[in-house]
Length: 266
Image 1 (spheres, rainbow, N blue to C red):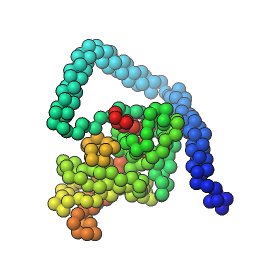
Image 2: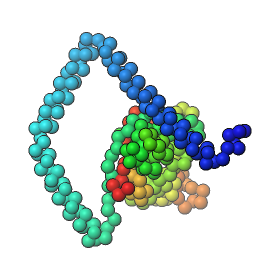
Image 3: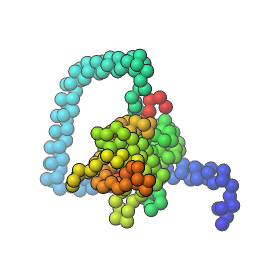
Image 4: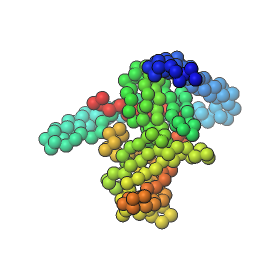
């Protein structure tokens, strides 16, 4: 009851200080997991060590090839910069909005909160890495979510499964916009979302599915990043559009690292 009587401003200040205090602890916990993996490798068998030595030799050979291609890559980089300059000139002359441009920022996951009400993760980077609230977050299997809260050395990411997460999307191969929102995690641990505003002429192939991807209209992600898959569509309540449950990546609960999309004009 005492907490309810505390002024809102004090609550916010206390919560921020609490997060700042725990951020180093969560990061240290993440690094301890890495250390345990290291000591686990120390006890590997002789055959395992030989196998890893071969993999290491292959990596070194590949690195040597990449070094030898250095001059070739430099020439390609110069050519790409020229092409980029020409594209910018064309966009200005045609008065076309520039394409989504961003720089990636890799961060490690330090904490997970995957309850029935809250789906979020925390990462080990924040304002010190020029991150800002609202930036999109992705990983190898598609969209993760968006930055919801920023501290100096940590950030909270609202997952794509969160009921408060909404974004404009497309059906792959169809440029008409649809709306995606998170619906939470089922009792079995599966992640789902929901699409709405799907045109009536959209049909799902028999024994098939449609892929849901990001749209530039959302302003947070580049076009074409995978969100999930829909296997069935049903008429909406108003009868004008269709809705469908979206199955999201099963790897969302296992993420170790993510990429934050830092828009260049931010």
